Length: 329
Image 1 (cartoon, rainbow, N blue to C red):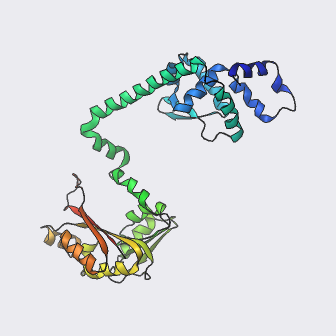
Image 2 (cartoon, rainbow, N blue to C red):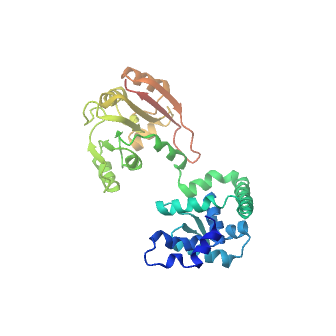
């Protein structure tokens, strides 16, 4: 059914009977060729008003008028960004409207005006891509700074949260003030945070207030308040250097992990600031040699031990870091 046929039906009052199905109310929106051209265009991508005008070669008042009709009838979604309003084909279109559109859409394939609209739309998108490329070319030397300003210093690591299993019980061993627990809680079944400092746990409880799947427990890393095989994943992030016997803490992590569970350790490499850090922050160990930690992990019963240096943060003032990951067989 082409747009001209729909217009013909509407003009003769077919829709004005008292017994007409509700879906026929939507035919008026499809009875104008400009509106069907807009819908075909917005199936391809999201466009601003000015971009739609370029693609359809129509004046802005005309395009705005038809966009308003399509919005009111539920065919489009819109969002405002700065001074621009962006339009797209409605995501939540009702099934009967989607079926109606598929019938109408099939009747438009042979008309050249839609093909020409599509060619101009590709040019509009190409120009959008060119502008983005020009931005990156001009911003390459400060791109990392821009990303940090916009999204924070951890933006590059956030996609890794997608590897977490939503069924997992995760142990944040040495939870501190709860920052890690707060980050991973939305992505897993439960987080159990353990720390020996009541002051740290008090701060963590404030941060995590209202987070229902996080439990905080006081305890020592060498004698964890956890059942055997309770965890799917355990994390020791920058806490092992506070432990008198790291091997004992790693053995405890092995005990509380399920078979097939993973342990992740983030630690400082051995450094020459040990006396100052011991005096100022209570460090027991001046960092570790990666091979040393690998040996302790294997002695605790872990397998598939992988140790890698972490990329340095140019703004960080402390020692360089490394990561060890291991499997509990």
